[in-house]
Amino acid sequence: MLLGIVAALGLASVVHGSTPPGLYVTNGVLMRAGKPYRGVGVNYFDCFARTLKDPANRSFDAGFADLARLGIPFARFMCGGFWPVDMELYRTDRADYFRRLDRVVRSAEKRGIGLIPSLFWNPCTIPDLVGEPVGSWGDPSSKTHAFMRTYVREVVTRYRRSRAIWGWEFGNEYNLGADLPNAREHRPPVWPNLGTATSRSEKDELSHTAMRTAIRGFAREVRRHDPSRIIVSGNSIPRLSAWHQMTELSWTRDTPEQFQEMLIGDSPDPVDTLSIHMYEPEDIARLSSCMQAARKSGKPLFVGEFGGHGARSPEALERMIQALETSGAPLSALWVFDFAGQDDTWNVTRTNSRSYQLDAVAEFQRRLRSSRP
Image (cartoon, rainbow, N blue to C red):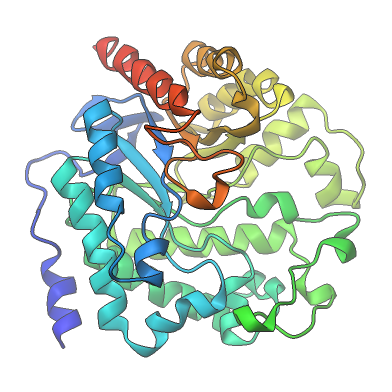
């Protein structure tokens, strides 16, 4: 009963005014507070996962404070457990689960940081949790979809009145594992101690058809409860052979037209954005084609991840930022802020050797803000 009351009321910060809350799309243009919007943020991957694991860990608040001081406006994060075992609290004590998520959302509200929660980050987590193969994402009558719809409803109705929520994302890079010609070699891992299935089969091989069914089902459920905020697939840039993988299970390189067909198709209505992740030089080279697809489809482009190994030096990062700025892509997010799990590789903080990346993102955001009409 308490959960129902809280969900009905929302968090303390209620959005007022005639314009929709968060980010939304009008006539193919990304909007915020009644005006076209361009912004750059960060991936704060485990800001919720850390307090989900340990309720005493509230270090995310210091992270949001750092972002606010830098003027970095939003963060994309994993809004759930990575492995099935990480969702145990949700199944056994939902009130406590949401208390921990409340703290993250309230902290972002307090610091003036927008959030784009990604609800189903790992493709195998929910199917494993309900005892189905990963391919069940392709069956709207499956337990996987039933769990997905319930979780979406509970999360969206609880936080749709929060000014911190800018949009809703399905998951992370599902498209990269779809229709692989060598799919048998890349089935999800078997780690029963983490709650996974004890074996895998061809039923755990994801297809583009199943993925699109899942994303469409997610988006429809979001729209039942939130009529306006952006919906994001969370996909990466399509593989160079994605169309041929889907149609003939081959690595044959796609034509530019086939590339755009896949990019648009992987964000089925009512998803209202296109999503890519950009790390490689060839990704940068295809950015203009992504923007063409965005204009053609009327769905603004979100570069949900950039940087990483593509930003090993200030010069390399600047080339990526210049490409983003020149392209006109309205929304992008650096990988990855304050993630100790990647201390040796890509983690960016205010005090480590990659702090130049936060400075560059902050400067990029200042330029975007000053160029708004």
